[in-house]
Amino acid sequence: VLASGWPALDNSVYRASGVTADGFKIEGADTEDLRLYPAGQGAGTFRKVNDWVSLDQITDVQITGGEQQYHTFQYPEDPPGKHHQKPPVKTPTVLTYTVDYDRKKPWYKALITADRLRQPVVLETTYPDGSVTYYYGYPSFRKEATGGQNVNLQNTFTLSLVADTVTYDEA
Image (tube, rainbow, N blue to C red):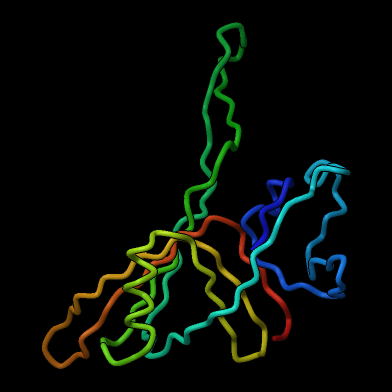
């Protein structure tokens, strides 16, 4: 997890490559655009992720948010009287996982702890084609199971992202 002087990389999760005693390369980060990555301003720190807990029994994943928001304005001196729009921000992106309730799974206790700590966590998703996506965000876990007749009891885990996701073609 990077803490970078470049806001476009700050709080992002990247793999390290070419690791030496003096440093490493950020694998997959395209830092060529000097408007986003000004020379001499990218110094920062990193935190290595060591502990992983597998999350299984996932029955549904939904992603919401990330929509562009627009600021609408008009100048009084504009003869046609047209409104203008600028894209200042996007809505927060939230992943919502529905998992089958099982208090004996290691992830159950880990998600309760993560929810109580209220600190961002890294989530790694591996897809059938071998690609891997890293997410970094604030977790929330509803430990109380919900359900109905003829369905499994379930919990909901959400992750409110604080940075763009990073995907690699293979693990």
